[in-house]
Length: 226
Image 1 (cartoon, one colour):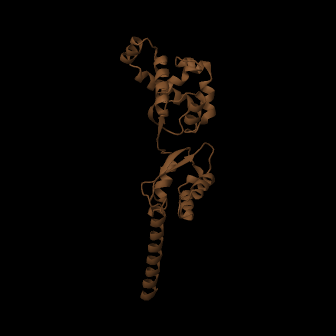
Image 2: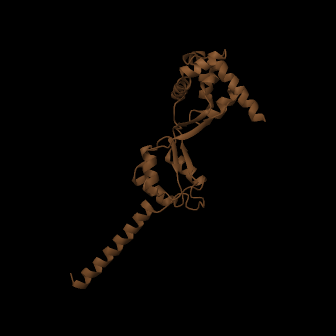
Image 3: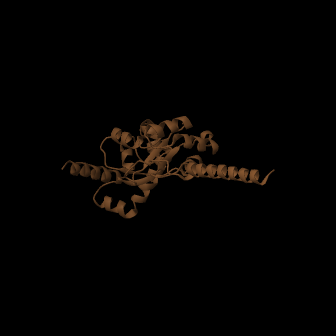
């Protein structure tokens, strides 16, 4: 092989390697999500329910115009085997994230928690609709439990007073929490709130814990009308 031919081959290989490296870097690192979003603090919560496929995930991303270069995302998702390992969850996608960062997050199931604020409500149906719709389990699963005497009795309530289990506050949950685990968490928060001192103060006013909460919810509801 002549010297000129070796130099030519070297140049060709170098160019091909450089081109491949540049494209690989683009696929991995170039910002590919919410790139046209002017508000760089704006985030997108990607909800992936049980039974979702890679196709349904792509439909959501494309339908909401979240991903810019769809081809590169599909290519890397397949290369990283995410197409076969879609995991349920709620994932925050931020402006400027790249393919590798997003796929790694989705594939590992590293979902983000969400803040849920409870306000005083008078009707159980309102409570069920507002809370149940925030979670994957949905309003029906929550309604079934709050209308089950055995479930309510477990926390010291009946199907009417069970609403007192939900203390107005802001809490942090994972979207995928199971309904029974959700109620357990609320039971734990209820016990933490009703310290012996608070119980004694209610008794001093001739009120049970439930009566005190019902009275407080009525006052809050009337105040909100003003």
